[in-house]
View 1 (cartoon, helix red, strand yellow):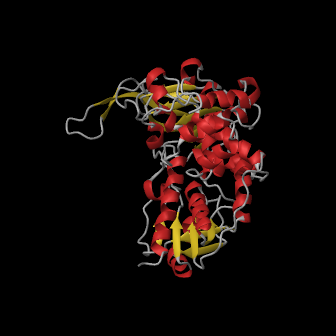
View 2 (cartoon, helix red, strand yellow):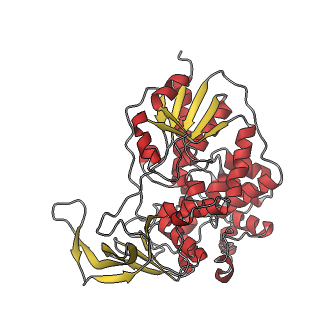
View 3 (cartoon, one colour):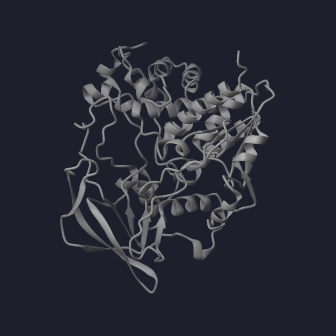
Length: 471
């Protein structure tokens, strides 16, 4: 390391967010950037610890000490090469990853000032694009074809890796563009979609073919389910069996399309939506798509209730602010997490399950925990509020999930829009042929983008082993 003692004299410095009064009026990325000098100083804080726990904490196995050292010394090209060796798309994770590596950083244990790995990662990658370090690489073909079903993070990584190995890769995507959750779930104020498009242009130059509007199903009888989804079109339907016959191998990376529902009285009232109905639609509007007025999910001048305390719920809060919501409340059925930085139940280097306050929360939101939803209330078919009740959790004498008990009288939260952000159901995969491999959330259930990317990389390795000549 160029300066192994920098962590003793240089404090952690984050780029921070744009001012609230400025950012809530647009969908530009909220996060700011440091100048190159400050960024290199932050990289110098990586302390060359004997056991870099950041390696094992990162699902991709990124090596922050190596690329932070190169960044500190001003070798931006080497920094990117080291970063890209383990991370196919660091411009994505540099913006939206929760940075498990930072929580496992030795400096986080010592003084709760870990190295700014995520911001360093984003800065390295943007510099690489600006300086034209990232150029198309068209590999020599090996004569074999692989289909990737689903163009989300896992599918894109699998496609990229397999293409670099020499396979002819065709990506089938049901929607009108690639990116999956990156494009249709994560708001533009966290991830500008030009960042995705820039990478897609490169992937196409390298020989990957993208086919949109194609639905791959286990049985063509399932086309009826597609027709019930207004965001999809059933222009073309294929089966997994057809793909596994036409290609040497197939990677299934279709994510977790089914959101967890809240089937309580009043669920059919107008004004109750799944979170992704709003988030995907808003991103489409920003991309120039026109939405019919009767299908528009808009919170302008409305009281909004977000049910679910995770990142998706946070994204709904930020989007509601930008649409002009009158008020935003977020409720969570589970207890309030401990206020950090430490979590006694998940000690370092594990991820601390502590209270997370996002940029969207900072923009204004009433947050409540241990609240159970009982009934959606309405008038003339339209939502007017939600009857909820404070609850508590007691240990189950038989083990397993704690028991919910009442802890207060029911009350009504006024709302004309409810956004259900309670996670996703783990998909069940049909019986698949031996040359079909499942990756990402389709295999594990909903998780982090960085884990989906790691799964896509692993699936590409499995395909390569499967298709490689056996000695």
